[in-house]
Picture (cartoon, rainbow, N blue to C red):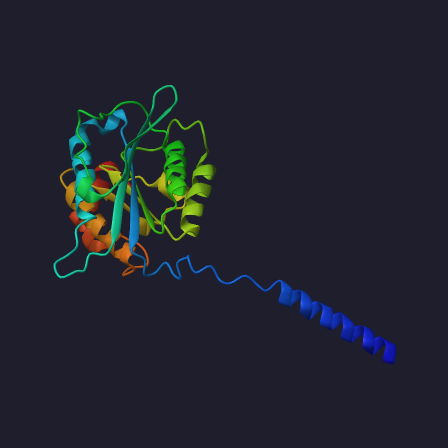
Length: 255
């Protein structure tokens, strides 16, 4: 019994010595303590440039430009310590996915207006492939907070790189990071694809012609509130939907 006690004491002392020689690493103080009060938000806009967008293309581009302007504007009396930037990518299908980043990590004050001379509608709708690409673009940047805005006027019809399940898995990773995803129907009210990739109904909205610029300006304000930690997430309310004339779009385009 005495011998066993001596051996136990020696083992305990050895264990203590090893811990003292190799103390636990100190907490990494370079990491943010919380995501609820950050001062950075990066917006990633994925814009459908397919042929069916032709009739509303000028307005769609105008709405993107409005978002880029408004997301950098502090309200009267607001201390503007929020760092904002915008990335714009367009997509279509012509023999393969065409995914072009037209603006990359641009601060609102440095934004150059996107026009028809730079990009115009064409091709088909590889929506799932494009979602995979915009998520990969955002993940490569890895900002503290991100808002991914998907704007389309049609359903998936030509993806070759990833399936609906693959697109959903990509957006699941986005959700796990605490980033936000919203899905906008431009003169379009069928959200089967949005539902299929896991975007909740509170984050989808149809926008009628003539309403897109104001709707995107309102979304930019919501993105700022999310970036500043004033709102935990981005959702569309009844006023947003009234401004976008969503019910009218649903009646004309079907839901």
